[in-house]
Length: 73
Image (tube, rainbow, N blue to C red; front, side):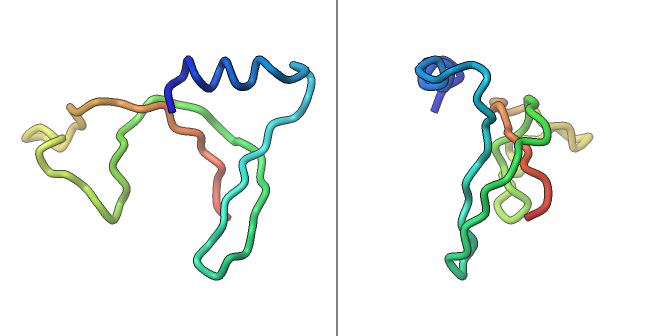
């Protein structure tokens, strides 16, 4: 999803409605949690790091994505 599409989707709702994120874990437990932070970062997860996306000093140089941090579930 792009930022533009997210803005368009959210634009359909009353701007005063609270936003939460829904996520399921491997046991099918469903969590509905607040967004703690939004920032620009790496699309890599800790389990699937693409070494080609980092320079010799370990700094990320690949394409960035907007990340919605929901904290610890």
